[in-house]
Image (cartoon, rainbow, N blue to C red):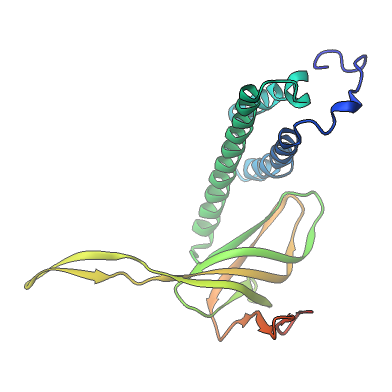
Length: 232
């Protein structure tokens, strides 16, 4: 099946065999094709080095999963565990590269704008995107706003928010060592309405201090609503 696909037969009877392997394989493939490689292209356009060596290694390992016995599930359980482990390893590598590229791009954007409090939204599709986007931000203040670089405020809804302690540090004083609380911060999961992101590109938003932000409210356990949405 690997070297003579035009003459090979399709095994209809094993489509549902070892569905966990097929599902993981599809998940990892789509992450590489639809997220990692397009994001790497965006990075290359902006001056980052394209991670060709890592992608070659990951695709080679993923290709090993596509053999007849592997994807068809005609193996012992021990062999199938090795196959799943290989897929999990490739998935971790993809996540690591995604995080690295996003951090490099975001750091470069922040340095160019000389603005640290930003949110960068990426679009790895070719078509421009206009609509709602879920994201997570970390702020010192409980209430804030998101604005475009032109100063236009975007409607934002907090779906979940928690306060995280900054920890403690030891400070040397005349009375001896003292344990001092480090200021904490808020972790907020957001639903950003009306986000506009160009195809195969990104949009930068500013995080600004603001008035009380819209939050999801429960009503008798059957309705959840805010200024923009109501779901019953």
